[in-house]
Image 1: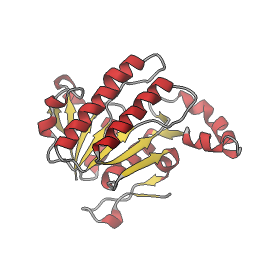
Image 2: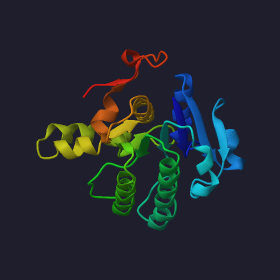
Image 3: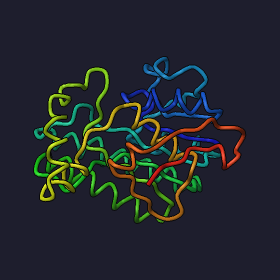
Length: 230
């Protein structure tokens, strides 16, 4: 498969590109010239600005799937201006580029919602989801809450609390929707979404992200692609 990535040098992006390449996919990624060395070996660097579609729109073809990961790192409640300047603007650019290039499948990492905190971040991500849906492309929207991994581990102290809340009927649904996922689970779910394109608008929430199991990928044989227990 041919995959184009925006945000490929980030926390999730580098790991996803590496996994896709290992699984035999062809990957291109828009990247600023100074950051091209951060891409995993084997990925094709497309020099451009993820906030400006005109800088990479002619390099998206012939991608089958566009994966959008660009956004503000380490989201915080006081970063609303950054969310609008980066997250919202980059989604508009990616959707324009993907739609113009005739991409059949658009993959986006949003955020679990509703939630009692991070309201400005959630609002922008909901707006981004609406822009993607309006494009008419087939879409896979992943909605994690917090992704645990190197440099992102402090919420592990909350795991016992999550476990308790998941057992209580009054808090079970919220605890599952706003649960924690690991970076490995997140990357596996993204790879599964890429290799199993959606027909229409597909939402992949925390329970589904956790459940993805990747099988060896052998030349496009559907029986050997990623499967997800629902």
